[in-house]
Amino acid sequence: MNIAIADRRVETDAEGYLINPNDWNESVAEQLASGEGVRLTDEHWRVLKFMRDYYDAHQVAADARFTIKFLAEEMGYGKKARNYLFQLFPYGYVQQACKIAGMKRPRGWSTG
Image 1 (tube, rainbow, N blue to C red):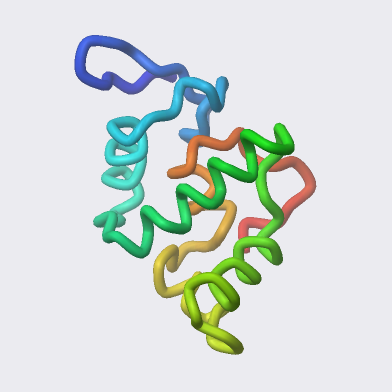
Image 2 (image 1 turned 60 degrees about the horizontal axis):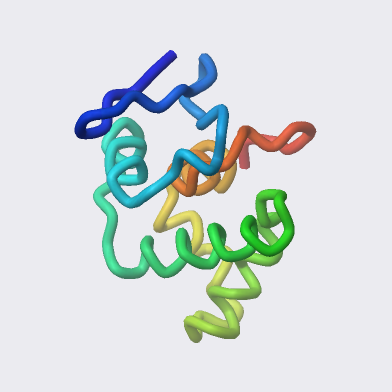
């Protein structure tokens, strides 16, 4: 599958995850978020930036526990971080956060 972003096309798999995470940019994120029914706020962008920085450093999607730790420690949500992650991405970390952040669908992870 492909999605049209401005003057280019970005290839996705059958579930809508990017084939090549390096095709990601903010316009791609907006398009993917729209497809998921998510309106991106500053809080979403902070989480997406963390996920992209983690990917750039490790060449793998951040496990949800690292993102929850980021929310708890860096964004100040403490023990409410896990719940807040699911407020931002109500259909789950893999289903929405990873997809919107431009990750390939993590294999072996549940959709939660």
